[in-house]
Length: 160
Image (tube, rainbow, N blue to C red; front, side):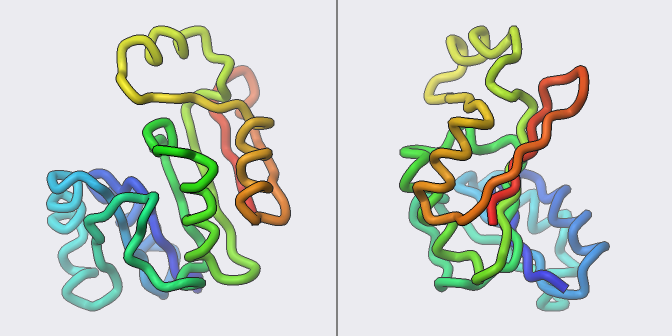
């Protein structure tokens, strides 16, 4: 029954999946007009039914009331977030007391291809689990757990 926000919602695939597992609202936020349009197109029925809204905004300054969401997710997007420490404070602001922030990324900061991506994609940064834990605790989260896929570089971080 969580109210969910998917930050960096892209084409809306994760919104669509979350809508299948909760009876509550699932919203999306992205700074790309193209992504917002695609998310709307994919989730139009949920939007029409008032179960979803797609927000065009920057994660570092979200037009969202304090303590709105039970769960906030960020799939493969924090690489591009400006001033990660302050941006995590902004995420913390919109999560209800006892809520969670889940980060999923395809690298744990130790992938052999990280340097190639960092040198070819302007403004991109990758983070290790310990770096993310420090930023998240500094941003006001009270606990952080990290999970790494065995024999892979996939990293999931859950902050409460």
